[in-house]
Image 1 (cartoon, helix red, strand yellow):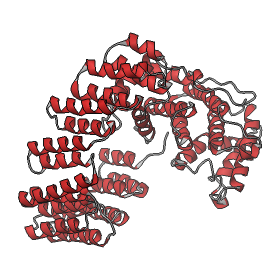
Image 2 (tube, helix red, strand yellow):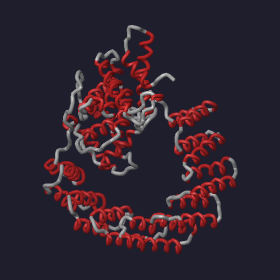
Image 3 (cartoon, rainbow, N blue to C red):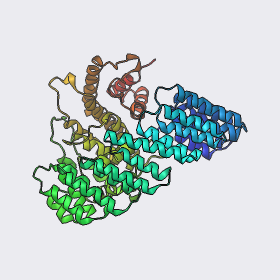
Image 4 (cartoon, rainbow, N blue to C red):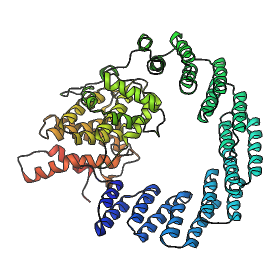
Length: 566
C-alpha cells in the first residue's frame, strides 16, 4: 500500500474519536511540510476541539510564509472563535501588517485581503484605510493600483477615490500601449464600481490599442468572461482576422469563435485557412482537425486534414536495443482504456480548475474509443495529465493516475512533445501499476523497455543520462515484483549500478551519506522512489537473509546502495 499522506491521516482522524483521533492528527502534523498543509492540519485539530495544537500549526504556517495573509486569517479566527479573544485576533492581523510593511515587494491584492480581514474582524475605518494606503504607496503594477481601488470602493464606500485610481490606471495603460491590462480595468469597473458601461468602454479601448491578433483575441476573451454583448465580441474577432499573419493566429481566432460567438461559419473559415496553408505543420493540422471534429461536428473534414491520432508504436523510432527484453508501448494503454470510466475521464478533463474541460473531454473520449493518441499533446491536455500525476495517498484512483502518467511518458518521447520530468513521473506510474496488479505491471515492463529504447545512446556508456537510469530502475522494480528470480535482472542490476556510479562521480548532488539519491532520486518525487524501492526490494532482502537458497544478491545490492546503514 502507498504510504499515508497527511490527508489520509486527517481522513482517519475524522473517522476516529478521542485519543485515536488526536493520534492520527499528530501523524498528519508530523508529515506536514508547508504552510498549506499546516493550515489544513490546524483546521482538523479545530474540528476535534484541540485548540492548542491547532494554534501551534498555524504559528508554524505563519513562520513558513509570513506574507501569506490567509495564515493570519486562520490564526485570527482561532483567537476570536475558539479562545474568545478578539484582541488576540486583531493582534494577529497587526503582525501580518508588520510583515507586509517590512517586505521589499508585496502584491497589491494581499494588502486588499488584509484590509478585508480588518473589516471582518471589527477594526475601524482608520485601520482599513491605513492598510489600503500602505498597499497603494508600495504599488508597482497597474494591478496593484486596481486592487487598492477595489478596496476603497467595497470596504470604505469611497467610489470617488476608487474611480480616480481607475482613471489614473487608464492613463498609464494608454501611455504604455498596454492591452491585457484593460481586462483587469474592465473587471474593476464591473466588480468594484458596478459600472458595466465602464467595463465595456475598457474593452473597446483595449481593442483600439491592440496591434496583433493575440491582443484582439484577449479582448474577446475578456468580454466573453463578462458575458458581454455579442457585437463587441464579433468586433474583437473581426479585427483579429484583419491582423492575422499565420496558422497559429487563425487557430486562435477559430477557438475564440467557438467559445464566444457561436458563429460556426466564421469558425470554419478560420479552420479552412489552416487547412489550405501549405506551411501548416502536423501539429497545427491536428489542432484544426480537432476543431472540425469537435467544434463543428464535421469528422469528414477532420479526417481529410489529419489522422485522428497515432498508436503508441508510431510515436518514435527505436534508437537502441535492450537485449533480452521485449518492448510493447501499447499494452498498458490497452489495459487501461476499458477501465477509463466516464467519472475518471471527467475528473482528468476538469483537473485544471475546469479550464479547457470540454476540449479535454472530447480528446480523452477519442483515446478511450480508438486507442489513438493526439500526441504531441496540446498544452491544456498535457496540463491536466501533469496535475493528475501528483495525486497521492490511500484514496488515489490508480487507473486515473496511471493513465495520466503514461500519457506524459508517451508525449515525452514524441518528436515535438513536452519535455517533462520523467524522473518524477515514472515512480508515480510504477506505484499505480503495482497497486493495480500483475497484468498492468507486466504491461508497464513492456512500456519501460520501449522508453529505454527511445533514448539516444551515448558513445560512452558512462555518459548515460538520469532518464535512462530512471527507466531502468523502474524496469528492475516492476520485473522483480513479478518474478524476483528472473535471470535478466542480474545484468540489469549491473547496468544500473554502473550508470549510477558514473553519474554520481560527476554530480554536484553527490552525497554519499544519503545513499543512492544522487540522480535517480533527485526529482520532485524522491520520496516516491524510496517508497516503491522499499516496497519491492525489502521483502526480497528479508527472504534472502532467511533462506540461503534464494540468491537475490544483485537486488539486495541495489537496496543497500539506496539505503546504506547509518
